[in-house]
Image (tube, rainbow, N blue to C red; front, side):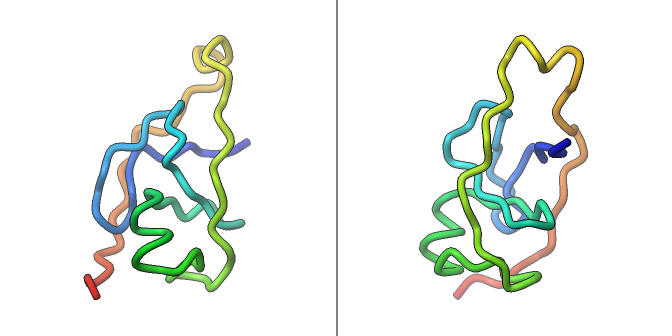
Length: 79
């Protein structure tokens, strides 16, 4: 089950569960579309894997399978 982290790990932008701007890698490192595309060229700066659109969990499933509330920040340096 995806953790659905609530923020970009680089710029700390909010990424709610229904956000179409969330990008993840296979290790669930989570970034906003702007950081993923413009800063990291669609490659995860942590593991080197590809960053793709995060699936959106149906709203009617969030009560049973809630998104994470734990914010992660890895402090990536701006280019």
